[in-house]
Image (cartoon, rainbow, N blue to C red; front, top):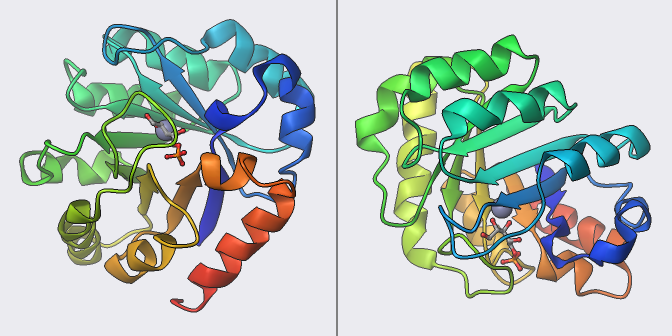
Length: 217
Ligand code: DX5
Ligand code: ZN
């Protein structure tokens, strides 16, 4: 069970300090948006490279970009320990996942709310994580989509049948109110943006979320 605070809700003028606030987290979730795959534009490779130089917290890059086949491996080379691409945008997801592992990162595959898992189940051998989006990607602070829980269960069940240690991440609207149903459904990596960075004590919010999911281990 791991907590990955999303820096999308952090103060972009002080990212090094904002990462210090969550030094007790397992990961720092970095939302890369290109203004094409999603209607929002955030940060890209130069910022990820700079953050990798200053933070000891492993980076979990969530790429909401077109043509991840071309761009994603650079994030692994920049020092992100986990790189997640959207399968909707990938030309050859199998090869892309192999390239990410080849570049030394964990390979993650993300599914938008309307994207089913079944057509991609045969990619599991190439993956270290499946990200089930619990909001429409693009913005922080949206409402949690409980209707994605059957997909979380389906992914967890497929992983159980497949074997191996593949993580199931949920991202979007995850908070103290919603994290337990995610854990119950089989998620084990929890992204939380506004629930962590909206708190005065961000590290305390991470611990609170951790304590809630610990009940489900
Ligand atoms: C949305 C991003 C999320 C976002 C989550 O497209 O992928 O990582 O930061 O923010 P909250 O937790 O506020 O929904
Ligand atoms: Zn994200």
